[in-house]
Length: 437
Ligand code: GDP
Ligand code: MG
Image 1 (cartoon, rainbow, N blue to C red):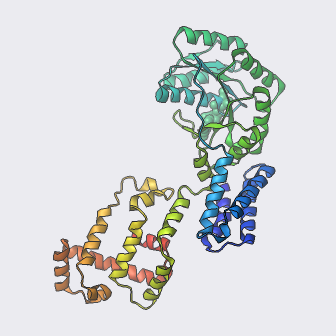
Image 2: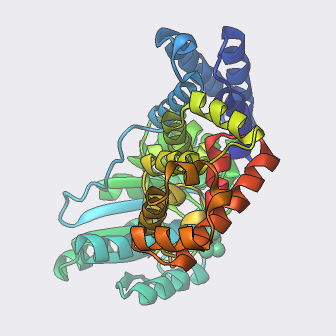
Image 3: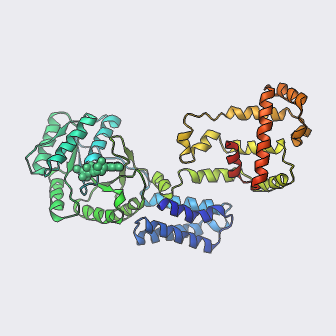
């Protein structure tokens, strides 16, 4: 996937402390290839990497303290920018506000019409009216009625009437008479662009002058989506894009290209078939998603900031010489604590958030451990093997814990020492891995 490819491309930089100009060029070439593979137009991808390169050189990435992270951030910021900066809402200034859906058949217009009606009803306290203007297939009209029932929103239809302009006008009159302040018009689409469809939607558009014309597009259709968007935009000059089917295996390519080609904001995304699977589009979140890193980038940044490389090297030596003691253990704990609460930190790891929802990672557990270590003498800390039964009793009393808790910590410490010796790696991530177990 695009995520994996970009991740690979950036991996080189993430790991390295040193970046050379060659390194930057190579990495950006990989980034460009990844974007093109994900159906981002070649020209756009090239412009993108050129911009990132210029900025990288302008900001002296090569001499920066953390060049890898700086590049990752540059790529992310630039992707965000490319997809449109801040999130844009929907124009609801009309009374009623008229929203016209456009797009190919199967793009998700009917489903999104329902989602939007539900969103405006529940989140914005609106009273929407859904209008069935896909007049050629009775099944389509029925589909909208089913959707309307699900979300308890009225659906206006006129079966047998084949004139979508007339239906739209009647629906707007009905809305005015019945206190609906939003009218969402679901239209017919075809499998591919043809003149009949374009004329029909253009006629509706002209006749009802909607506040908001939305172009709905299936995000899985890649480069085709861009051409479709272009054609619809030429005829309708639409106000915003809806990217559907962004659940499952994401391809962000469409989002990047469409924004660049038509220069219209992406307003919402659809993330499933259910009526609540709608999200406001946030470019920076989409960039995260495309980069496949969740909040991993900031996790890496934070971990590296706090983890002193020099200390890591010293530690490695101690481990090798079997000199790792409780003082080192304590300073490791403090390193980890500096990075933030365990729960926060774990929450940044994609997937881990869900797992941790019911598990409580208790920062208090650290307090006990610290108390126990503080109750040890310096000698005991550096030579834990000398801690016998009577010492355990004294340490337990001194720290306000129990002999069992002291025993448990000693056991954990021994396991950890063994593991560290085995891994001989050091480094923040490995430490964290050990702390989790
Ligand atoms: P229309 O022809 O443009 O009106 O498209 P529909 O709304 O009928 O949707 C076509 C198909 O795509 C239906 O099976 C929908 O359930 C499905 N669909 C629409 N939006 C989404 C989405 O965001 N995610 C997923 N997984 N399926 C969707
Ligand atoms: Mg439909």
